[in-house]
Structures are given as C-alpha cells and as structure tokens.
Image (cartoon, rainbow, N blue to C red; front, side, top):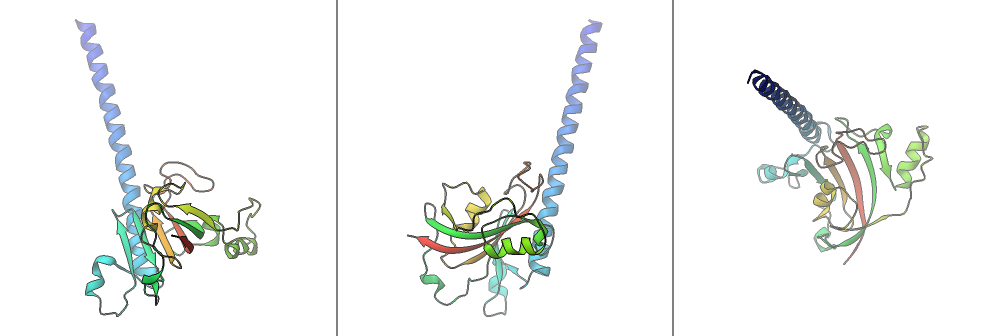
Amino acid sequence: MYMMSIRRISICVAMAFIAIAMVACKNDTDTVLTKQQSSIESYLTGGHKPRLIEESKVGESLDENPQFYTRWDMDIYRYISTYYDEGREDRAEIYNGTKFDMVYTAYIFNNGAPAVADMFATNDPDSIEQLKQAGLNTSYEWSTEPMSITLGSSSLVGGLETALEGCREGDSVEIYLTYIEAYGNNYIGKVPSKSSVVWFIDIVDVKE
C-alpha cells in the first residue's frame, strides 16, 4: 500500500510538471504573438509611409481617399497601395481558383521598414540588384520570372492565400504576417523560427 501511494504521488508530481511546462510554453507563444501583432500595427499606423488606418475606421476619416490596411484575426495585415487607382474596379479580380502571375520580395519583419539584409526570397530583378549592391549573397540563383499561382492550390503559406483574395491585376500589395500565419515554429532558409514576415507583391497578370 505504501509503495502504491509513493507511485501515485510520483505520477501526480510528473503530471504537474508537464502541466506547468505546457502553460509556460503557451505563455511564451502568446507573448511572442502579441508582440508581433503590436509591432505590425504600430508600424502600419506610425512609421509606415503613408501612415495607415484600420479599414473599419475608413468611414470616420476626413481624407477623400484614406490609406488603410485590412486585418484578419490580428495575424494577417494587407495594404493595397493601388486601391484608389483609376479604373481599378474594372481589372480582373483574384478569387479562389484564379490563376495569376506575381512578382514578389519577402523580408523578415523587424519592427520597421524592411532592410535589404532581411530579404529572404524574391523574383524581382531590382531586389536582386539591391542584394548585390549591398554585397550580400546572391549565389542561390533566384528566378527572375513571375511566379505563377492558382489561388487555393499553391505552395504559398495560408496567410498569403487569404490576403491575396480580392486583389486585382495591377495591384501592388504589402502583406504582413505573424509567425502563426507564416512559417510557425519552423526554421525556413534564413527565416528563424517564430518570425513575422512581410511580402511585397505586384500582381502582373490575372488569367480569367
């Protein structure tokens, strides 16, 4: 009976340690995520040029064409700089299943305007030239051809898929993702685990 009691106590103690570890891990994840959400929103409404407002506040703005960002669940943020372009509403729109080509440059997001050193993927010749001018490694032979995508059946991370829907041909788009909607806990190329990222995308051709 004594040995059984000791065993039960040991099991309970072990389970308690596991529960504490799980809580600590969750708190750490919540802290990282909260900081990334706050950092992205602070940049978009402060240091970003132009300064942006959240889409829900557009109706309150006194500006004729207020520049705004759209947010999904505080983990996906999108800014379309061409939103007010004349004739935009007549251009082909991207829906689930739409095929389109895009030119992109992606950066690790470090709380401010992207730096060349934070670039981790691109097919934009101008961005590759920036890397060369900065003396950074360009030996990985990135393609300079537009990337062909079918929305909903591509290798893009889910956050990008969500934010690209509703964009139109000719749009220039910025998409900011917390690590939850980017690469999660994975270490991808030069992107560390739990990194927030930003993609600059030009929609060059929508195939209706």
